[in-house]
Image (cartoon, rainbow over all chains, first blue to last red; front, side, top):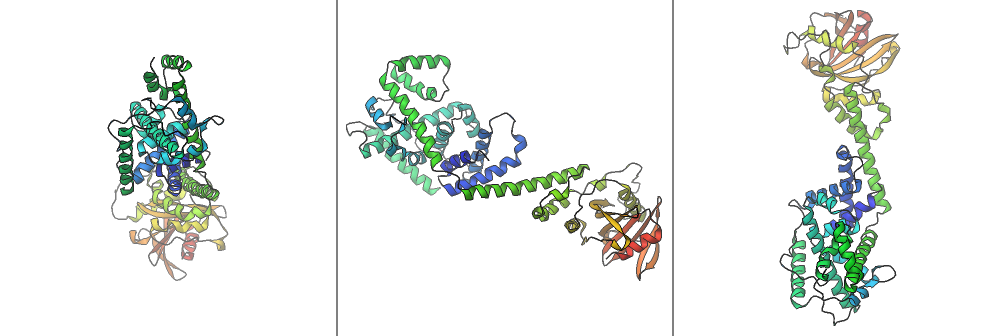
Amino acid sequence: MSHLPTLLAVGSRLTRSNSEAEDLVQDTLLKAIRAQEHFTPGSNMRAWLLRILTNTFINRYRRGGLERSVLDGPDADPLADGWIGASTMEAMRDPESRAMRALLEKEIVAALDELPEEFRLAVVLSDVEELSYKEISEIMGCPIGTVMSRLHRGRRLLKRRLFEHARTLGIIGPEVEVGAAPARAEAVVDLSSYRKKASNS
Amino acid sequence: MSCRRVTALLEAYADGELEPEGVLEVEAHLADCNDCSSRLQLEHAVKKSLRRQVYAEAQPTDAFHNRILASLQAEAEREAIVQFDESSRRGSMLSWSSIVPLAAAAAMALWSASTSDPGTRVTPGKTHTAGFAPTSMEQMLEDLVDRHIDRSKPEVTEPSLLDGMEPEVGVPVHFPSLAQYGARWQGGRLVQIRHEPTASLKFLVDGHRVTVYVFNSEHFQLGSPLKRRVVRDEPVYTGWKRGYSIATTDRHGVGYAVATDLGEDEGAEIVASLH
């Protein structure tokens, strides 16, 4: 029961709905009780429960596995490609809390929810749950290399979304080339096609 | 090391997944690169905000807490019943009264669906010479005695739960109090008589063991070698097997039998009182 907040938090981001997440968590706990002899004592129970949660989600909502990224093809990384300078990155943070500035932090879950499922889950398991790459690979049923690439691409999309938002809010100046023309156009097209895909499914 | 190379390693570094050599390289670079330090701090800030906000947006409500507790409790009850069922199959005892009454209805269905094997155990000294030949009365008597002398713990001690055996036995199973004989109820279990599921209800009368069986009489042709007699205007068949008296009767399709070390008349009297 001490894992309830964890399961609900991860489940809510998987389903993007608190009420669906509640059903998912209930199913997960019942499955876990029925399968408790498969739990290896001394191993990470939270990771084990999250694997059941993920599988339950896939079986119930996604017969074909997690929704795949529609964002294939090269996309530029504003951080790695040097469009963003140190001062801009500083501007996005709150020096006291060492987190994002409050205005940006409020947007962060919405930005996360726009990610394709396989990126979103990887980011949640790593950044929110702080699981190791190995644990994530076991939960998601994929090699560690795939976990790393999902994490990288998920975080890159997430940060790009936050940069865009920061610019809209005027937190970072218009002179900053957030996502130069090609990358930005690509992001807009991909996100809207992703949304279309998500709403059709 | 270039900024580009460090940036490629920065995520693994922030995740604590970088090999020690990589860590040294990255830290050496971070020490004198402002951009990369900011990049790392931004990574950490994103993580921290994600953690805070993802949890803030999905706080379990009291209602949800209660719902989960209720469903886990229901599952625990189901689980207890399965364990009860399994332990009774192994012949050990788990107090039926410890199981919450609410679960009883569901329990009995499970219980009766899967307790059909204790009676099929071949007990020492018992021989199956005629295989599955049509209900030979002799073999039925053998089974009635075997099940009577078997000291397996009861599966059910709560009289009101006996009717849960009905689906398996195929006829109504009611608790016969036998109070008029000063009988003490010991408990019941589902057994097999000639491979037919039969309720076996055990009593003590004056220190004598009495087993009352309830079965579907369609499966048996009551008669020889038992002698027919009439008790309380009802036809009853009585006889002896291995030193135990056996009495049996058929009431509108419901078969009753009594096995006991009391006499033939007492057995006949008890079986005639059942209905």
